[in-house]
Length: 319
Length: 319
Image (tube, rainbow over all chains, first blue to last red; front, side, top):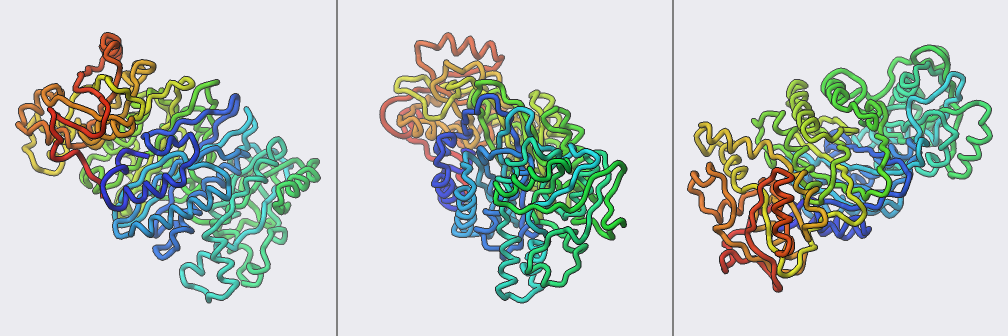
């Protein structure tokens, strides 16, 4: 934590206290110094990822702050999961909007704390600032993998099966709920939770080391991310629409699968493995208590085909 | 770099290209994956720090973007320097304000590139987003130290000398220039540069390993940070006003030393060492080509005294 946060009344000091209560790992040095100090396990590679979340962009201004904190941790851990990495430590940047109260910021940190506790990864450092009109958050997640065992996006081979964990579309429909486009019944609440409280597929990522040829997390839409995985691997990808797993709530929505597969925020793992290893993939799925579905295959060529045709829209396109 | 940045026209895609041009280290994996992968040197501890910079708070909206990029890197490396760490890698979060052009954002990344080249530390990952009305930047700097050799803020001993690198106040006066409070002559330009292009004291930090008992960087004002170092060490600190080093330009400003010592953004190293090791400190200073001055001492007790009295104002107080 920066020296910037350590004095004065008001938000930064108060928020630092909240962070200190979380940062109990010895590496955090009690957030008393500007740096954290971490013993690195011998011979393991370091996997590092850094994502930001911005108000109005990645969460609505009325989003419960604890959900924002949770999601900040979860989306970064999802990147570690896709690498087959074991989470080691987090550093957080809390840029709190000028009009937010200390209580609001504390609730956000409490959500970070819930995720930290749930996923067993210590917060070891960070920074707290007033960020202007909008809240802007950053997080660095550090993880470890045995030498050369990280899963990469570009490792797929022609003939590989394409697999997906869990199901898709629920978070995208949850975003619609958040934006006020759907009734607030029990089903809507469940979808909203999928949008606001994603669960990174850490156990599955670990179980896929040495088994998956390529992996990534689905954050911008299944079709778009599948196309990216194929492109990174220098291959084409075919998906069978009927094989794409949808939850009961999502099926009940009546939204066409192609629309669901072009929504973001699923945070499922998309990965490839040799067809000869299907039984091992299913065993890894069982061991990780995470369902997986075989939704397609990789082959020589370029591009994405769904039931033999290019889909109209791939996914979330950023500015 | 997040998958979020990889498609679509416009800022995020263009900015990702600019980041890719910088991220040439193998650990960056060409920014093709969401994670970077780094071989960690055997037996070294990992030092990690994460600071944010926000428009209107840490830089003025009219600040040249390359200077913002430079400062983002420099302030984080300054934290590593104060730990005696060798920089290993950087991850950057670029939250670019909605009304900023791609050219502006590219210039900011170019400033990051200048710092990366100057300090020899690779950029291995990050994220690019539109952040709302204000630009908000985050950076994680990873460094290494031999086991147990990190410098800490709380390690000072009673009787230690208090030392300061370089000189103070120039950056604070440079901020006044940036805010339009001073004439734009050559002297003003030099002060402005001290504010916008701080140089982390990396070589000195390395040279102080095993020699300094405590260290931190001066970011919020010499008096405030000296008080923090003393408090973290459970000691009192005395400073001799006349021993505080000031540059010729700063002396010419006529601003009283107590005001200069309560200004922020110096990014000098403040450290303590045993009086018996003064010659070694001066040798380290010479080896690092970084001037140091002995400005006071640590003793039993609490608080900060300057020429025997408590100063009226300590430093920059945050909201």
